[in-house]
Image: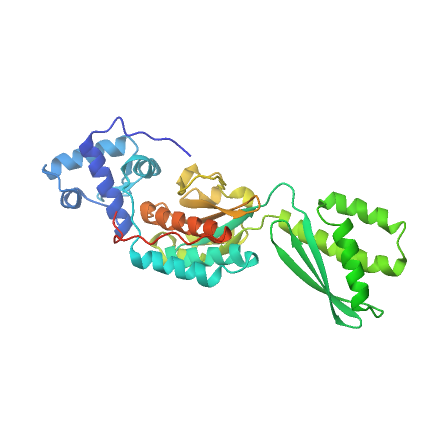
Length: 359
């Protein structure tokens, strides 16, 4: 994240910059000196404000899209705003109720957390959202359960030490009994749990040299299923939601502008996102050219991390124009992240705020 300091600016210029940014966030239109005077409540002439705005442009905090137009913020201006000028946003009672209701209603199983978290955030913010996890360096199968369905089919259930649960239905070319499955389950839970992917492969090779072929068929099916589960968890897929929300914002109403970013989000690669999984509270903001990916150079990313338990962390974020209400989006994301951490820890949801949302 770039560090920008406003030490070279007077307090009046800072008020002008803040006014330009907050009006542009609301209206997506270049801002003139008269509007700034009214918004900021400055007791100076429009000519003085115009001169200050010209200075801010020369210093790289503002841009003028057309000669006769007002000014718009630059990425440098947004960064200074986020670092020093942005006020805290207090979530309203209605906002916290909406978030808590969404979390209570949809975050019941760990398997659904990542996908549903993105959907909730996309709906709350009206921006495209992404969510991903960073599993621990070592994930293992904690337990296998085998359930007879019919004489020639059974369900294998694998639970990892990160509380992820997967199941698979197997059809066999011979009959199997529940007692056989119970014995097999005991063997699997004794010899094939607590092992990494490589260790499972080696143990399977060792058992293959000694086991009865019919018994080994069932062992092989179940253990390889467990290995597939571990491989899946190691992929760190990115879940996205609300990509079409981009089209609701003026900056992306041109398909030529929107399509590259929509394609990037549809095929999101964890390495291309400015992911920062930390234990810190609050949100992280990456503005425009601060992004590494070329597809995000004209956009901003706001993200917050949360704790899934068992050594796993998650990241939830939104992508949108640099003209974002950073205070509001950051507050909502931080609240969602805190709620997810507490749900995964089986604690209560964050308390509701008692003040209406203000900037």
